[in-house]
Length: 358
Image (tube, rainbow, N blue to C red; front, side):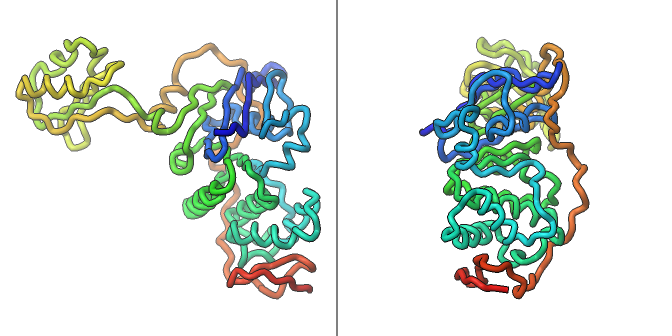
């Protein structure tokens, strides 16, 4: 798999605050990778360095083989970037804003109409293309931001908290959109929302206090050799018998939601067959035996609460604060088809492109 992003030993300080402390990772072509961490972990700082908007104190980063620090403009021309707070111009329509972005990206005039039209269709903005951005809901404004990120059809998309402030319906829409975009682009996006990463990503990189604490595919992170044993009725001394098994590191008793006695058997090796044999030999009323699978929430909480040396401070990159978004306006329906921007290509409901003049 071709390496699209390679970050090596990135460090960044703001005064006495260590935002990043030796961050290293790679992203391969075609992957959807989630950069997960609590607020203030260093996610946005990492993304700003990857996109050339911020220089690290130490370390190196390449995108498609280009040195981001030495060739920032070349790198920025190749990637699509949706920042945490995309700077939109409220008095422009979505299509006129995209035309402005096309000009800023030096897209040839002869190609702009087609690329603007494709971005509008891909992000579901056909019915809203001629409305001023200030009249659009939060979710639609986020789509406009995504449209500018994919306007030049980049092979790499970097999205910083793409669903922050959206309602549940809008979040699902953006999830589906990101999935569709992944068919042609490698995607790295940051989030502090566990369900977002689980729903979208192939792989997750967990950053806590400026350090990479985990980097693996979701199924690999969830894998464990621990065993869960659930019995139909309580059995005396079952925990002691399980704890006496040679590879067992410990046994934790609990009760399932249905009220059945259960045992969490800790081991570095897969001992499910041995647990089954023990239960059979003791004639226990077995209801279920299975390998334990950790949820992303469990993994994240374990990493977040693990003791470590006191940090100098929180990330100073202005990480997202939850639940402070402005109230969400209802989505607009039935846009005025007559309001168009001169020389900008539009797409009709049939998907055909035509050019209209005001």
